[in-house]
Each structure stands twice: as structure tokens, then as C-alpha cells.
Length: 156
Image (cartoon, rainbow, N blue to C red; front, top):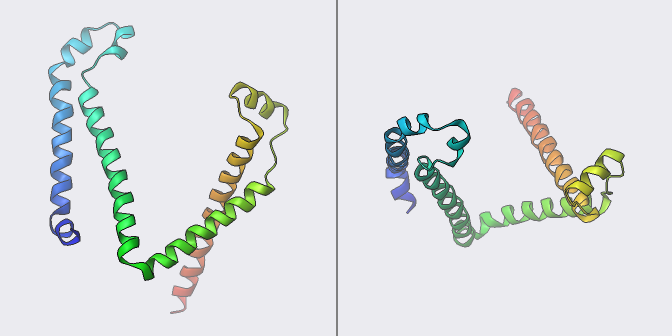
């Protein structure tokens, strides 16, 4: 499969993109005159763009499923390489749970009003706080790794 995608993958992706574009453009172009004649309040109810939107959504779902399935396949066929990946996922999970246990629900007046408006419980507030902190920590680590790698390359 890898050899097939390496050899024909770009052409296949281009052809599929062209097909989706045509599926979108043919109904859109053929119905644009009727669309332009609609009053502004009815333009949101038109269905001439649905075929292209459904195709784009289908491609997103297919790509997501393929990335998950190929990831699982690579984990199963390359256990030595999978160990590093699994350790890194475990480190991120531990970091998240540490940050979750340290998080406190927001107590500001405005945040309390927003929490009531959107039905955000204390647990969800802690989850959001931990997720944001984890993302910021990972971004900081990435920037630090980039700087260290560039300094290291400077002296090579």
C-alpha cells in the first residue's frame, strides 16, 4: 500500500480533488442565476452548494479514518518505533492529569456569568483550564526544542 501511495498518491489526490471540485461547481454554476434572483433572506435556504459541502465533509471523514487506521497499522507493524510514540503519549497524558488536578474553577464575576450562561460546571472548567495549559506547555517545549536545535546546528 505504501509503495502504491508513494507512486500514485499525488495523482490520486489531485484527481479526487478535481472530481470534488467538479461535483461542487456543476450544480453551483448551473443554479447561480436562480440563486442571484432569490431575496437575501431566502439565500440561506438554497441547496445548490450541498453536493460540494457533502463531498468535502466525506473527504474529511475518510482522511481522519485513514490516518487513524494507518497509525494503528504502523503501531502494530513497527513495535520498536511505537514504544517512543506510546511513551510520549503517556508523558502528555501525565502532564494533562497533573495540570487537571492543579486547576481551579474560575471565580471571576464575568467568568461565573459565562459559566452559568453556557452551563459550564466546575469539572468542565478545570478540564478546559488543563487542556489550555497542556497546549501552552507543549507549544513552549516545541519552541524551546526549535531554539536548542538551531543553536546546536550553529556549532556543527
